[in-house]
Image (cartoon, rainbow, N blue to C red; front, side, top):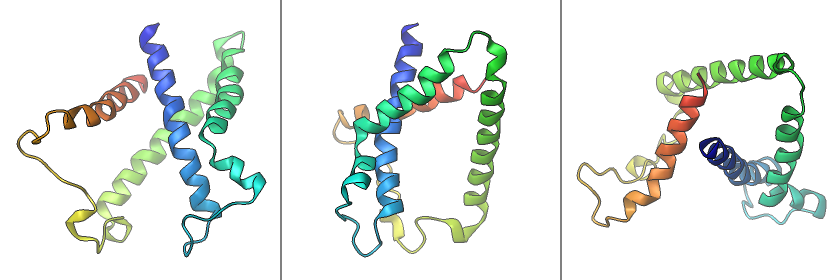
Amino acid sequence: ALKCFGVGTSYLIVIGDVMPDACRTLFCSDDNPHCALDFPLSLLTDRRLWILVFSVTCVAGLVCFKKLDALRATSALSLMMMVYVCCMIVAYAWIPQLDPCAGMGDDCKGDIYITPPHNPFAILKVIPIFIFGYTCHQNTF
């Protein structure tokens, strides 16, 4: 139960981190990346709002079903999303025009260390990414 709580919390953290940036990308122009959105749209960049909306609509809605048969549509949607992600990974790997780092040199991908980094605490910064990736992979089966 503790692991499931941790994974559920990490999903909410990811939603809270990603959705405000996605809304800024959708609603702000390219010439002004730090645009000041009008009041209704500024709510869309609030991290806490996205976590609350996702919790109330998705999580609370899915846990209220009396039978697991009601989750058929949700399971089908999740399988379609997994196929979509796999197709996008293959497309980004094989089609050079889709490379987000094209023309940016080696700076885009960040530093790559063959040996441990000079700062031993730097590894603590990336461990949550590996743990989240592992638990997400484990939850697909």
